[in-house]
Length: 112
Image 1: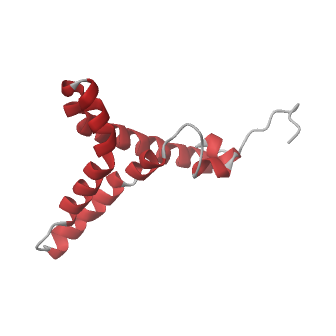
Image 2: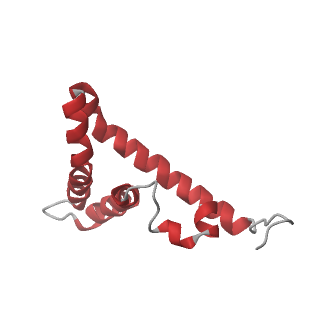
């Protein structure tokens, strides 16, 4: 988050992080919101099912490539991708909290 704070354009597009990974970060909070929605509205099609389905669709290309290389690893991909997304969203939230609590430190010899 410090890098994004210093270079805001990197938050949307960078050469390291695939766009689908950034999208997958949103599924953890979306699932919490959907669970709350399902508990209050009791819809015929639970929102949780829709969020989980969307996550699985987003993970499908990666999972297929992994299954073709190693079937066991490929079958482990969806739960591992869920764990990765949860860890990343926790990291983003921790980085945001830290960024708002502490100003950016610019070295004295920096041109900025």
